[in-house]
Length: 112
Length: 117
Image (tube, rainbow over all chains, first blue to last red; front, side, top):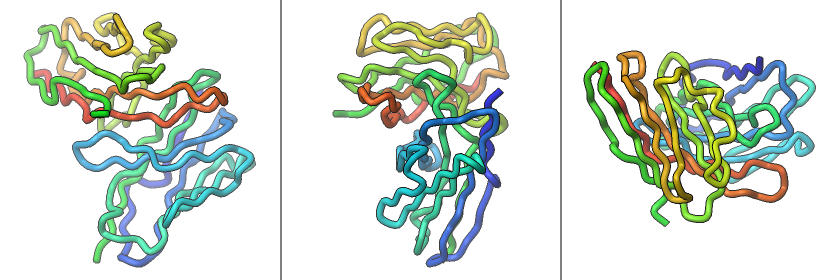
């Protein structure tokens, strides 16, 4: 069955550094994936979508890469700020349907 | 638009009681999803609808769970009878058909936190 793994449950970094989060998947070949941010007590919020042929996508301080050979996506936040502290979730389309399945997320803490 | 609206935000009930969670998707969205989130299992897809029709309910854990979407602006998730292991945050999300074969971004509600004693 499809499996999505995000590298660690928690990541602690200092303000100004680059945060790198990893999403690995197995038994699957998604055409695209999405990244979401979730704050405590809130629903996830969409950040970025990247297609298999895009390799890299940027949005302000965010950058996402997609390596279909390694079956891995990397999510980078440059010049991190305490306000970036949240849980970040990656998501893949479920089989041939249109629903997304999510990884468990990585909780990022940025200290000042 | 007000976004996806869920109710109740919090529900505490006793084992064996019926629980009904409600969702109003964003107007014009074609897809509606129900997810459940726990610390142990993360965000799990329970069921989703396209144009009010259930497409995949393979994530519904047991027959105690049922979901309906009687019209484009309303959906319910019902648990009967409820059990302590059903305690979780239940999210509803909606998205629009993109016409490109790519699932549009999901817009989530704030969730319904269910505690079954």
